[in-house]
Length: 226
Ligand SMILES: [Zn+2]
Ligand SMILES: [Zn+2]
Image (cartoon, rainbow, N blue to C red; front, side, top):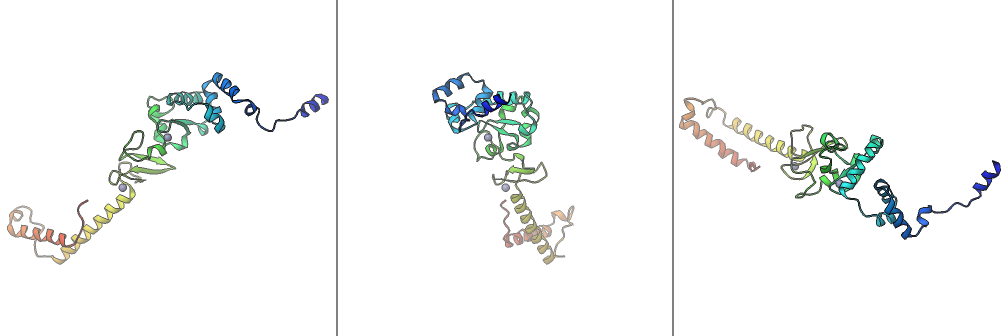
């Protein structure tokens, strides 16, 4: 026993992995007979094999995704297919909506799933977030703003399709309008009545007052175009 151990330990160890010592022709022969999952794994190892093995198709990757899920890879190792960049990527690169319900492994819409980076690419184009779309990234809400068209952080309210910057600008404009209205009312207090619904509503005096209101708004230089 002792002699067999000393014999095996005396065998010289190659300084590089054995597979890389083989000529490229041998690599090509080996690759031809590898099943799809092994071919994909070998392609990930280094640039030499990434060059020798052709890029996988989207349907190849969907097959691999299902295969890995069925062979017991845990959630931390879950790889998902992106139709935008045609890659298998870790699930952390996707918004949770992209791997739930019909877009989960084997779901009828798994083939339309795209990663966050692909989704954020500029419009127009396919396989990306359209205006008003919302998604989660690193626990935060993001939106492709319906107002400015940019990608930015979104409100916690799921119904809001504007970015936080546009919401802030809208709030500031509203505040300016309110200040202008308060200022006008303070200056014209008692000169006409806003309580004139009914008989006074038709009164010429009332409409005269209204005209003054709009003239004053114009004088405030407030931008109402948006
Ligand atoms: Zn992608
Ligand atoms: Zn915006």
